[in-house]
Length: 541
Ligand code: SGN
Ligand code: CA
Image 1 (tube, rainbow, N blue to C red):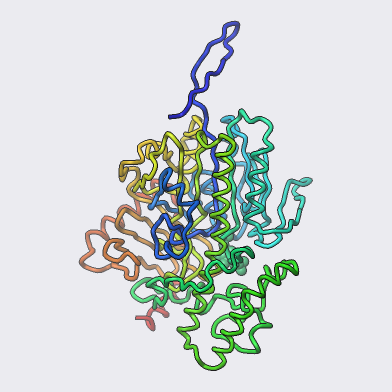
Image 2: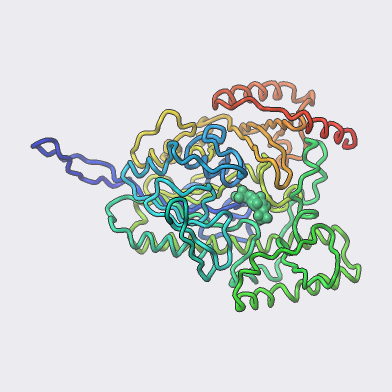
């Protein structure tokens, strides 16, 4: 159990000895776009080829949540939900496009400072304005880079001081986290460190030492790699996030223009290679020695007519996965280094360690990369947590939790009050009792995705219970209903299916109630788009 700290509290002339529970440190390790299927503790189809032993330690020594969801599956908004404990329509940061997070509102970081914590955020930030409520911050500009990244620290007015460092972003972020912990002046104060990696976000560039990590390995394909998008919303087919058509040959697949021998490949023949452009001559040498011969063989085979369109997609999938999983390797090492640091510095006992990511990601499921849709792969967020003496090792809570719950959980752990307007709930009751199912924590989660533009994903609003999911697509004025038991891969909507009439009715009611509970604003329909989708629907049966 938590150690008690004896504090002397001054009371006028007299002095009183009271036992105050020692506030735990919080190490929040957060990555960008890390799919549950690529964390072996979740047991997905990649667990044997790509184990994550260090992240898995959190599951073994603490709890792993299999029903952890985001409120809006995109970077800035997910981070805004975490900092505010509120849904996007309340905190105002609804999409990556547009203004940043209004930092004048209530923020968990400010509240943790008030509760006596020393706070820091290091790494990806993506909320557009300077961090507020942090004693120390050092962030990546926008999406940040993998190779030889620039970090931003505070500058005059709204300016930043930029420093470009040689090395790999995940390693440098970890170094900076350790340095901050090491150099803290007031070590009696509890800390909140938010260590936020760029990886494994696009453009999936592994560290030189991990380029060959999956050489000779065939990565298992997901069952839905060749999804035809039938039997669900008409908005699925025009997506722009498929491996077959939107995975760029240079940028994503690492087949640079110079390596293509003038061949026009199926899909997106782009020219951009930003990470390659940032590398030192030495880094380029290692990169080319790895990709060069493989690309040469691929182009030769393609030219010789040996590869069908399907073979090309399979090749792209292997290339995508080996790079993505390569970047995950460095993240897993980062977790290992941080855990070792805590151990070596006697901080293990009183530190809560969390591993999470801003949303999940498609690793070829539904033919995709990217996120945004309310399907399980990108709706879910990894959430693993250890807290020695409080959480029973090896717990697998079933409760449906969301990123709006992190702020109240941190405050609760700190012994601070949770403001009434916070929409999330503290996870402490579940954590303290983590051997039990706790299905009743919340029976419905709410989801809303608002961004318009990149990857052509429509706005969508949904709810999920432990078995069903109901999604409304405003652009096509359509409902989809999924049954996660009968159809776990979500390949068919049962909306308007007579066998699901009762479920549909209940879910529609819950959808209204949940939106009301969270004060969700009225959905604006776009008549022009609805007309286009209506036409598309005629050809798409
Ligand atoms: C970038 C990526 C997208 C990605 C968004 C959002 N394009 O714009 O593929 O969906 O970020 O990601 S890229 O050409 O810049 O790589 S998020 O994690 O920030 O939400
Ligand atoms: Ca992200």
